[in-house]
Amino acid sequence: MSWYAYCIAERASFPELLRHRRPMPLTGINGLFGNQTFVFPASDLAVVVSEHTSEDESRMDQQAQRDHARVIAECFRHATVLPFRFGTHFDDDDSLRRSVRSNHRHFIHNVERLRGKAEMHLKVLVDDIICPETHKVLAGTVGKEYLTSLRESASAQRERQSKARALQLQMHRMFLPDAEEVTCKRAGEGKMLLDIAHLVDKKHVERYQNKYTSATDMLKDCRMQLSGPWPPYHFVHRHQQAQHSTN
Image (cartoon, rainbow, N blue to C red; front, side, top):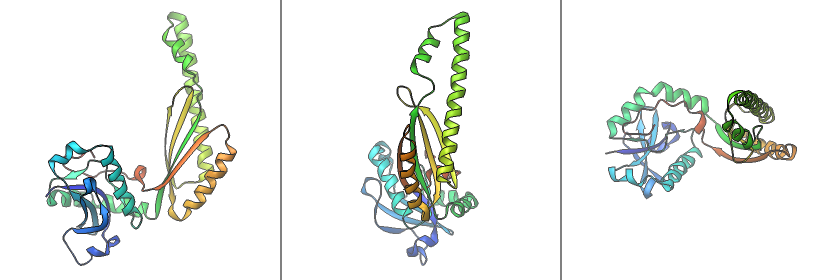
């Protein structure tokens, strides 16, 4: 039987597995396409799965992505989970067990590192250093004028990076996360977006949310958006090996 994989966790998080060696139904949680989810035991770990068929490949749409995330979020409510990427599946029981066995040390390390942790997702929109006109001027110049424009553009790029680093540092000092993942990109006309994932202790989520409220009052020149707590998607170091998977 082919299995679609959602996440991996400690076997002890699922008491129904303590006396069983075969996959057990996970009550109250439906997977992709309304399929029954199961907890698949693998040594001292467990993989949350549902049945998977070749026909399912053509049905992997946005709703399936939402259902994938929903199952992980439900499991995250009572266990430390390591999410699999959307689309990960295994051809049969043996391939699933081999993957867990070959990555066992890595999985255990990640579970220990992320125990009791949650991810908070922060988006910060600010004015960009480089305006759209800068790119238009650079594209329409030649010769000495081109070289001058190129130097000005490079200088502006350095200013953008400095501004992004300063803002990232400011966010770090405000929220004091255990770890962070940050990306910066242009967003629309004259705007720059910092996409920040913070790893925090679950017990401190309310404190984090209070800091966010204070930050929105302090940083009037920023538009901020917060979501979470989420499973620690950005902080799982991935080495899962699945056949015919997107992982």
